[in-house]
Image 1: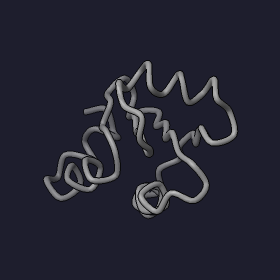
Image 2 (image 1 turned 90 degrees about the horizontal axis):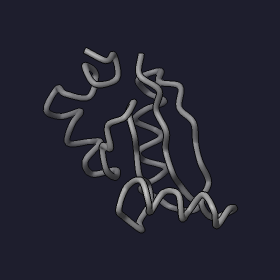
Image 3 (image 1 turned 90 degrees about the vertical axis):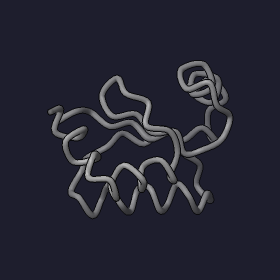
Image 4 (image 1 turned 120 degrees about the horizontal axis):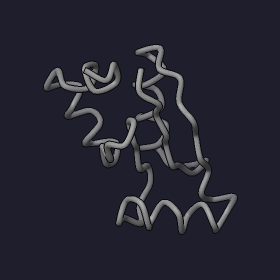
Length: 85
């Protein structure tokens, strides 16, 4: 299974929704709290090109935010991406 990273903040409802979807699939992920660490926020902006949270990576693939994660799931493309196939 591909490693999953979620850049998030504590009170972001979209972060909560994205993590809930991943949890529901039994996906273990690394949560990187950018509200606690400015260097990690700058890292997120550098690797994603975006300022908003969540920013989600599956392996080396930048999925985007919560809306993109749910769209991938609805299209049946999230599970193969998570499996690395």
